[in-house]
Amino acid sequence: MKKKISMPFVVLLSLVLAFAVSSCSKDDKDNDIEIVEDKPGKIPGLGNTDGEPTGQKYSLPEGIELQGEITGYEGDVNTTARAKSKKAMVARRSSELKAEVPADLSPDFSRGSGYFVRLGIKLKNSTSSTKKLELPAGLIIKSRSGDYQNGVLLKKVSIDIPANKTIYLDLHMYCGNERKSASSEYEKYDLAVISNSSSLHDLINRLKNKKINIEQYYKDNRVDQSYNALVGKLQDILWTITDSEDGLNEDDIKYINEYLPND
Image (cartoon, rainbow, N blue to C red; front, top):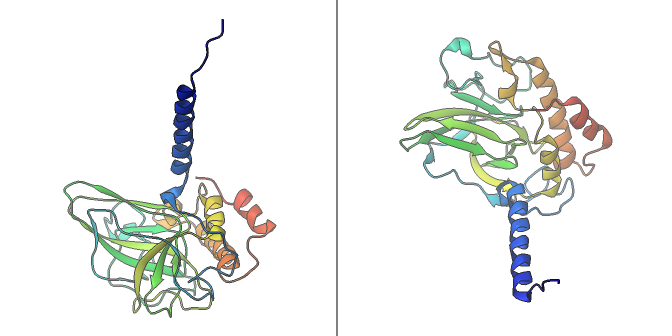
């Protein structure tokens, strides 16, 4: 004899399943950003497109405080957990394309990926325990005057900041405005948004499990030369999205899929 299933049970089961699917979908979205469909070359605040960068406003987590202003940085590189000595740092790059003017401070951490935008950020952990800071992919740090390039983070960065300590972060980012000047220590920058651009997130998702951050290329007290090559290529790819209406092409996608190493 078959048992009848009551309608209230069916309704309850449907609600439970719907909630489970919704929860899983939400977990799959980084930072719960509501992505907005756009077209390459038409992203507000990037390339030559007017307006402010759009997305979810980014704020530092509770217990982590910005000390002073964010400025451009050009100096030593340190991708170790903590700066121990001058020998643990890499001399400034030999490339002619540099952010302006060397900084007096040496960084505790060098993180991120990119070349034209390097920012010096002092961060204080005001709590009595180590705090993990995660800067999400899609984060845009904006030039305050608008005369310099806005920085775009293409892959998440994580840093453990010791209790009651202030660290100096050397953050490497990609340029979101090809025709503007590279970062400068004379310019001030502001934490802006986690971009909601569909064009930008298409690239970010393709790079999610790829080895592109500078801390992944640091060995024997130096940054491997392969890092400089991939940064140049990825910058060109980003400009096809921010400064051009072309967008990603088959060669770009092939480069990402076949030539960039996985994490």
